[in-house]
Length: 382
Image (cartoon, rainbow, N blue to C red; front, top):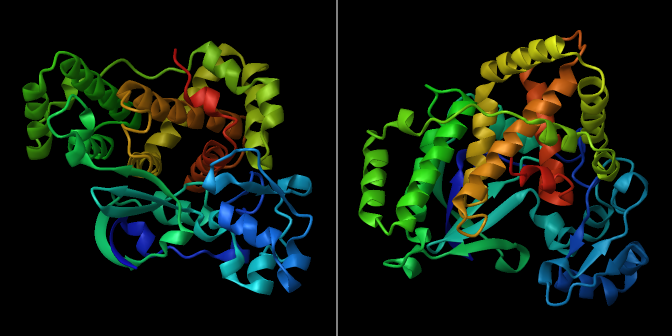
C-alpha cells in the first residue's frame, strides 16, 4: 500500500548496518512476539520449526496483539537467534517474512496524525544516533510517499485533531503545540537547560489559560509562535538541578541490579561509586562545570535527541493531556544524561568527545524504550 508519510530527514538515509553495529539490537531487552508470528511459530514445520522450537513462550497478556509472546533470552539477555556473526538465524535461514513485527520494524516508530503516517526511529539504535544526533544542522522533516505493509508494522498512536475541534481538549492544537515545542528546543540563542525551562514555562502558561477557558489567548500565543514574535524570555524559569533524592535514586542498588545493558550498568555503577560515595563538594562543583562545558560544546546532540523525542512520542500528548508531566519527562531525561556523564568522565584522562555524549544517550534510550527500569526516574517529581 502506497501511503503519504511525514518523516525526519535522517530516515531517508537509514539502513540497518547489521553485523557492523557495535551494539546489537538483539540483546539487553525483552523481545515481544506479535499474535500472528506466535501462531506461525507454534504451527511451524520443517526448517522454521527446528529453528524456533523451545525458544519462545506464550505471554499472559490477553488481547494484546503485539505482546502475545516473547523470546526466551540466553545468557547476557541475548536473543536465542543471534549467532556468533551478530546476525539473525531466522532472517538468514528462513527469510525476513518469518521475523516477528518487533524485529521487522525496529528501530522504526509509526504514528498516524490526521491521516498521515509518521515514521521516526528510536535513539537506542546506534546508526540512528549517528544519523540523527551527530548532525550539527537542525533536524528537519519532510513529506514523502512510501510503500507500507500495514500487517507488519505497529502503529503506536492515532491522532485525529479535527475530532477535537471546538472542545476543551488541547489535542485540537496538536500541530501548534508540536511546532512551538520544536521551535523552542531548536532556539540556539539559549542553552539546552534554558530551552527546557522555556518549554516548561510555555506549557505552564498554556495549561493555565486552558483551565480558565481562555482559548482566545492561547490562539494569540500560537500566532506569536508562528510569526516568530513569541517572547521566550517571559517563560524562562529557574535552572534545572538534580536534587539529592534524584541523585540517590540513580545510584540505588536495586535499580542498578535490574539494568540489563552492560554499558548502562557501568555508567550507573561509576556514578554511584565515584560521585555519590566518594566525591567531595568542591570536586563535584568542578565536575559539574566540566560536564556543562561538554554539553555546551555538543548541545546540538542533545537538541536533536529532544526534538526526535517530541516528534516520535507526540509530545506533549504522550501523558494523556498532562503537558507538565510530559515536559517533566524531557527534563528528567536531560538530568539523567548529565548525571551519568559525570560518572563517565570522573577521573577520566581522555578528552570527552561528542561520541561519548551519544554513547550515554543511546545507553539510556535502550533502557527507557525497552526495559523501562529507569521509568521511575524520568517520571520523578521534585
